[in-house]
Length: 493
Image (cartoon, rainbow, N blue to C red; front, side, top):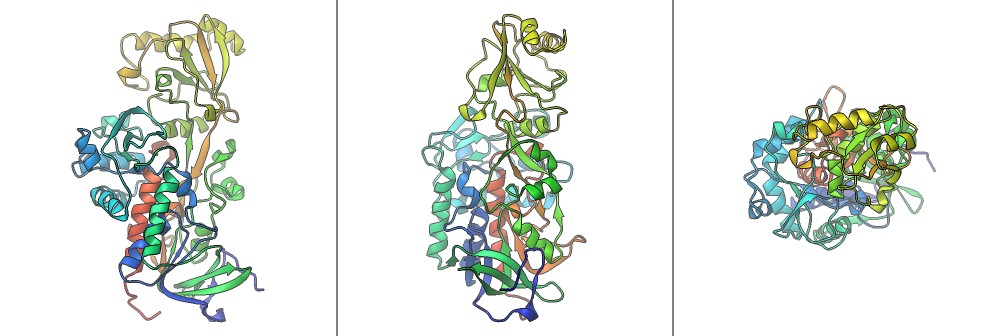
């Protein structure tokens, strides 16, 4: 059998036969692939969907299915809860969350179309309850919908964009929302007559000498099969969190932890396929990383210090921002300092344990074998300002400011390598909002589209990430790719 590689296209002139022929090929059956297939089929295209696993889901099925939506005055859920969300505020927040190089075209399209995306999801059968859960949460176990899912209320974001909760969870009890969402989308894909081929692993793109994409080689029953697409191939194959070699090459900071989030398919194959025909891969060093020290919400009233006993973040921001910033610190030791009034047992899966306890901060300092004053000095500085309702260095919200002065005192061990620092990648192929894949000089590669974590989309900075951005980005821009790919080709293919 000929050796096919994601790093090298199979030339059209070398294709021995056409085992499959359709208008649009979708590769990957997570949220991006499902939504791409739905829109392409709804537009009248004949669609074949290849998935390497034995069923649908992808990494979306492992998620909380939180989707970041708002703007346009607010979704029905936001308005029912008393929130009015302006599109411009959502755009400003997403632009800040995008880091130094946000994709402003994608951001504006996403924000302006967010209400329509909410209604589209409902039309596919996704239920949303008119309910709001205040406070800091990760994955609620109730069937409620609206949550604060990012750093909207925290500095520096709140200084530029009016805060509003935008995390929308489907109405489903427990923590299986991702599977619940994917089951709904799967049924919709099936109802549209999409030709679904499971246990089909992508081997190489089929492209002509000018790198126009015409199809894909897949392995089925351990044999190469050749699929031809008259209009386009859409890569929705996840990121590269499960590929340690790619992590080491592109995002080595993530190797400080051993807790990748994803499924075995998140091995970077989709990105490599795109690059094989000249696609640009951007922001490959970026990733999401969480430190779930909060909830319990009272822990946001504590302070986080690094190995040099310095605060490095406002503790009231999103747990993913905190995790990403923690990975940037020199040394592995990270401690959360708490007093008796705010201490609660951390979540079991956080792997956060008590490192030291004392009746005074000096005693905690000694238990941690720190030099005299290393701990007591930053605590005293924090307490002095907190007593006045101030945080001049990190601007934590007043409702989370409290002097840590109620003994006994504790240092919770949030050290890298001990606590749970889960991550996935954010870098990927460069695309237009339509899903069309671009080269390094931003030329469109004919016949190639991509969406989901195969792409560097809305979320492209770990320190700006909010829950719901990934599934939101995947589902919305999967739709755009599906619609664009379904358009009849300008030239015969």
